[in-house]
Amino acid sequence: MSRGTDVQPAPPAVPFAMVRGATRRFATLDGHVDALVDVDLDVAAGELTVVAGPSGSGKSTLLSILAGLERGDRGEVTVGSLRVDRLSTRARRTWRRTEIGVVMPRPSDNLTVVHDAAGNLVWSDVLRGARPPMSVDDARRRLDELGLGEVGARSIPQLSGGEQMRLAFACAAVGDPPLVVADEPTASLDSESGHVLLTVIRRLTASGTAVVVASHDPELVDAADVVVRLDDGRRIS
Figure 1 (cartoon, one colour):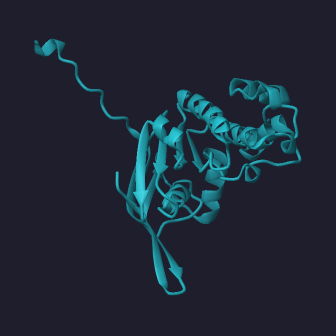
Figure 2 (cartoon, helix red, strand yellow):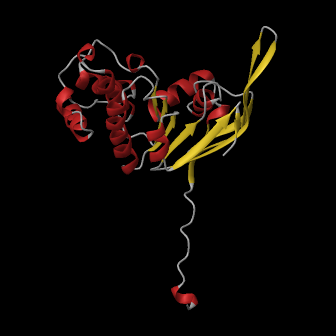
Figure 3 (cartoon, one colour):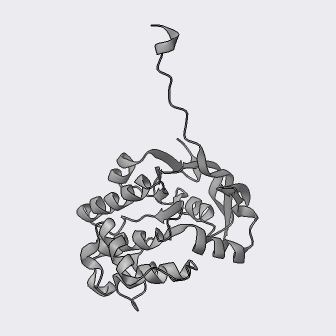
């Protein structure tokens, strides 16, 4: 075969977010525990990255450091061109609220019962600083795009756990943030609800959003573009 017809491999995706040498140690009554030890992570735009591992492996700690929920004892965190690890606690809180999306493990931690489903999207837009925020009609259209059109007028207690978690992802994606971080989003869901949630995640990545999920859900792991495995706070693959 001539050189002109050789098929060249595609270049690796350029990381949008990077963690380098993340280390986190917690004090205990009899010493300390190393939650993370010198962990690296690359996250590309438009990809689903799953951080997998058993309970206590450091998954949640790594995502918390990536999302600026806590600061590592050592290491660097870069999202876009911003060194997140250099920000103050207040600046990280503002950055997290306005620039990325975060989904907590319990659906109720992501939503407010004061508003219905569509109202939660509008409120998320307000928190992001949108002036003016999206209208209720815009929120309902957004829910429809994510396969949640039927729940727009329902109150949060009327939604199933799976619907609440899908709505939490929709709220996290308001404003089209380039990065959404989710900690164990399928932990409290049945397999069917988890499968439906995966379709929402895939719609986000198809739009260019980088989604990073901590999970030991086999379906999420199988669907991931990149799988990072941790054990005892260390990256093993």
